[in-house]
Image (tube, rainbow, N blue to C red; front, side, top):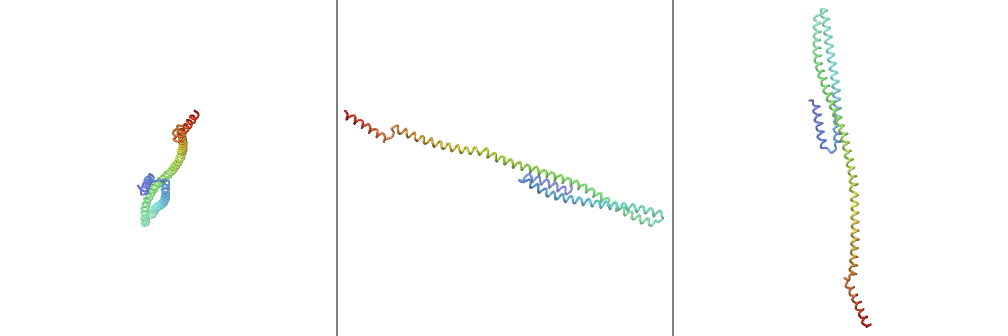
Length: 222
């Protein structure tokens, strides 16, 4: 596993761990996406450099291969012309070109494999970026739903609890007024009953005086 892939796995794992504890997942995801964009840009620049380097290696390989074939043909012509010494010199250059072509061909094959690996990792990074961006949309929608639910419950509490509390206070006030009225009525009733029932000493004295007066008048008439 390459260093880039290990870094990607660690980063994704860290994001998932932090998302579980974060109170603001959208902000955390935005930070992650910003870092991912920077990593993608760096990786794409590296990819372009690798492609350019591979093209240069290929050109070196093809040039050496062409030189090899050309020197082999020249050596054949020199040998046909009886110039063995010249043929040897050209064949020496042909062997050098052949070695060079093999070296550059090996480097070119390695570069091609590196490009394939890097391209695979780039595609994975882009897929991860898209997945996290989709998560951002999901969490944003989820947070908006939670905010709307909070507002709905707040309004429901006012509607459901506000009116009963208001009428409860009104009920208490009316009950107090009724109690006060009943108390006054009872006091007045007790006063009247006491007044007419002869329970008042002053009234009893006056009544006794009237009786005595009536008796005196009756005695005088007799």
